[in-house]
Amino acid sequence: MSEAVAADVGVSSAEAEAEIAVVPGDGIGREVLPAAVRVLDAVGEFSFVEADAGDAVYEETGEALPRETYDLAARADATLFGAAGETAADVILPLRGIVGSFANVRPARSYPGLDAVKPETDLVFIRENTEGVYSGIESEITDGVRTLTRVVTEDASRRIAEYGFRYARQNDYDDVTVAHKANVMRQTDGLFLEIAEAVAADRGVEFESALMDALAMHLIMHPEDYGVVICPNLAGDMLSDLAAGLVGGLGLLPSANVGEDNALFEPVHGSAPDIAGQGIANPAAMILSAAMLLEHFAYETEAAQVREAVEATLAEGPRTPDLGGDATTEDVTAAVRDRV
Image (cartoon, rainbow, N blue to C red; front, side, top):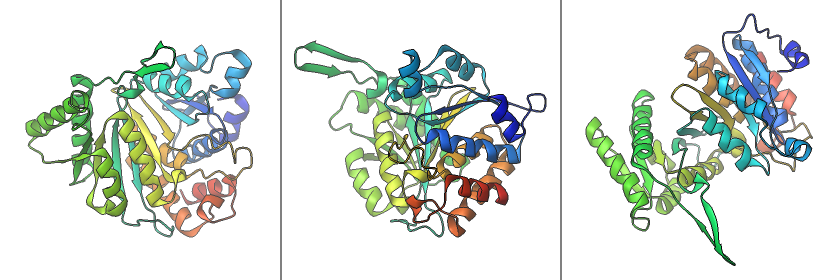
């Protein structure tokens, strides 16, 4: 992080236990990410090193993800990312790859005091993060005809299934669902489901499988019937956004991109250009992503403190306009930090 920002949060590299790459990105990412840094500073000692990426960098330099940002994320102990704009495919997908992320963990739960569509919602989407239709294999084979190759491998399917079942056990979720569309995508989702069945059999655990389109309907109607949902890449992206609507919006959903030795943490929401620069963005998802970072470092007590502070602030206020309030990003950040 820049000297000015580091001085503002009171962090020195000599005192720090871990180096965190800080990449604000675009739009409201530049407003909510500093909020997470301030909260992390209140509960631990970290060395924050800032680097840039995104639309503005692309316009200025011709590359959305500069080499120095790439190198920082590769060497840091973890990365905090704000939000991706129009250059998302050139920024967040490579950043996830840099940290070796194979699982995208997206909790979606309701909070007391908020006007949630389904207050009983408590879901965690475990999304395969390396392949599927996001593999980037697209072609124009002739004028007016373009193709997209969907990649599903046994190794990646096994790794995400093992991670999902393990996550459910460690976090006391009894219900595990594997989302798929194997009735149509027989080879690709057929393999994904087949491997999940084999992993479950090896572990002696039970799960339900569900066609992803039917699952979307059932999640809306009865989210209480579900706990951990293991998904192929695109399905996990779509279903978790759908679940955001049940709990109060994307401003409440954090996520972790988990690798074997490294990880990247980001809110599920995008850059929200319609409100960027107004100082009213909800920092809750970004701060909750920071709580997931704390868990990554096994700071369980500190992670619980941050979550409890966010929950108290959501319940009692102040709240940003997306949640019916009139508070600023700074107001909410200060309230969370005071409660930590």
